Image (cartoon, rainbow, N blue to C red; front, top):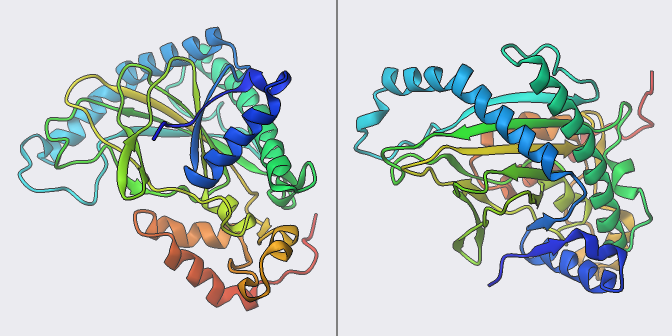
Length: 318
């Protein structure tokens, strides 16, 4: 079982068809793939990494140590099920950026993250169009499906996973599927820890220099009517080395109405009529917040139960 690694440059040459087939297979069978030569300059990635690690050391490391001490986590004897061994903050890019308001960031870091976000947004939209092509949907369909009245939501979760004395008892991040659309992850190339669940086995997502790891969120599972699945993944804390992870979530707008693409439902056999529910993205998120670390199927069922109340009239664009 080779973790799917895609050389993005090959989409521009005679290996395009083979590369598209690899992406299709990764979406259908893994829910994850890793991109090389994706067009974001290595220098920019190095700068993002340097600034992120510097910011953690300067502004967050001490706070994390104090939290660990206050909860007595150094000497835990039994598994901790309600806490993740991670230090995080969030940046929002769309509909509007909050980078200027986030405290403690130096101006250079803000500038670099703005530039990084703009490139990731472009890459996310390129990827969505490649998925459309593989699915036989018209170009731009997924971007439109995410649009709502104010465009998509896009933000980055900046995480550091410090060395953990008891990685068997405390997860870096507990197993979950991602609620949103398409996720682009820039991760540490030295300290591993990210794993996905495939065929009931936990498989390492290999850390590779300057790569971007892509995974499918719950909303793409709904829109593709289950053709692409969001996959459970987790972070295993390590006993040495701090792992850096920047996960950028390109998600539907809060008022976007999400439902299986009619073109994909029509292809299904009659008895398999629309399996996935129709709902407003924000309603799904409200439910997800409380159930993130539980199976996704009951979330879809809950959305099905309220489906008939979804007002699917034209969305007001005030």
